[in-house]
Amino acid sequence: MADVDRATLHDRLLGYVRDDLKAGTEAEPLTVDSPLLDMGVLDSVRTARLLAHIRSEYGVRVPPGQMTGEHFRSVAAIADLVLTLRSQAASL
Amino acid sequence: MKDAAGALTEAASPGGSRTPDWPALAATGLLGAAVPQEYGGGGLGALDTALLYEAAGEGCADTGLLFAAAAHLFACVRPLVEFGSERIRKALLPALCSGELVAGNAMTEPDAGSDVSHLATRATKVEGGYLLDGVKSFVSNGPVAGLYVTYATTDPGGAYFSTTAFAVDRNSPGLVVGPPMEKTGLTSCQAGRIAFTRCFVPDDRVVGSPGQGRLVFETSMEWERSCLFAIYLGQQERLIGQCVQHARERSQFGKRLADHQAVADRLAGMRLRLESGRLLLHRACAEIDDGEDASLWAALAKLAVSEAAVATALDAARIFGGRGHLTEYGIEQQVRDALPATTFSGTSDIQRRLIAREMGL
Image 1 (tube, rainbow over the protein chains, first blue to last red):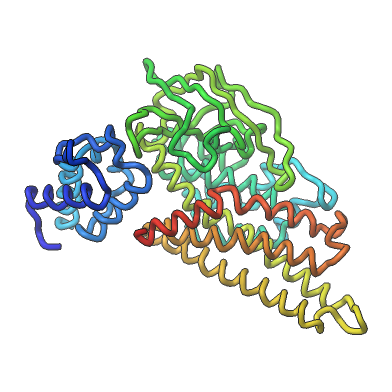
Image 2: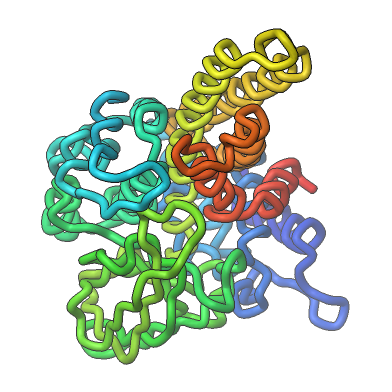
């Protein structure tokens, strides 16, 4: 994937988490700040699918040291992590 | 390694259980094989470690002894290598490699066997550490261990990040070690319950970061589902060798067992299962060594090798006929040692579920 800006990344990740990981409802739609952990979205299976999606779509692997709740608490936080990892990969 | 592993069993009769001689296990290089040399280990990668355990499994007929060593290394020591602080590594790894300190993996709970996402054991944050409360079951090496790698819920609402891993000393106040469980197989590896009651664990004994328990456990499972199961490759190699020899030497209905097509076909099937599992297991190890996500390959390898181990042990019992039931021939012990393989480290059904997940289902 070519370079991506934050807003585009928010939209794309939001779409993935909402449609593929089935998060949010009509009454309570998912936003980039929705608390994914409190909502129980990121169980083991869906976390593994999300990591595979980040790897295939954005070309970065999340290293063990970055696998913390802080980086996965919301779509916005995940987007920040992806941007940081892509930036680090580009500078290598 | 085959000869050294074979010497580990000299002290007991066939079919009997032994108490692991930990310094002797350490002397074979098994306890610290996959630990960096700077901490007293062998500095091997996953594939070389698997080859070591495979050779040990072929040379040593007591799979329980090797399972004790493997549970120590893959479920306890590896998490400390990969996620432990430098302080933890320096303080614990040399003694764990030398056999001076034995480790037990305390994950399973009476009501959470395969479902490790719902741990009843809680860790409550207090000044300077955590208080652990809960009961762990099927703790391999539990009755004899001096150190436990355990997992507890620290944030019930944290989803994937709800649990934390800890390295807990046996002599911690509030930790009670239960007696060995009576098991049918792998009897030389004692297993038991561990109870935590307001057991204080200092902050510097958190393995990884708070909330990383699932990650720590899953990473250790990749090693266990690949390297530990290399023991069962060695076991199958040994059993096939015994069966081939028996089929050549014993005659029935005027010809060698080997000349009965039903027996030859059975042996061909045993070889097919062994070699298929071996390729999958080596592939899983290569993925780990390459720093790739090995979860698919580890699940495939674990499923193939564990099912093959059970099928091949039962086939060996059929080929040996009545002798397969006699303790002195050792075949019945191989059946009993193979049976748990489809249960621990995630049942076969769990492996299929993991494979399906990796396929995007």
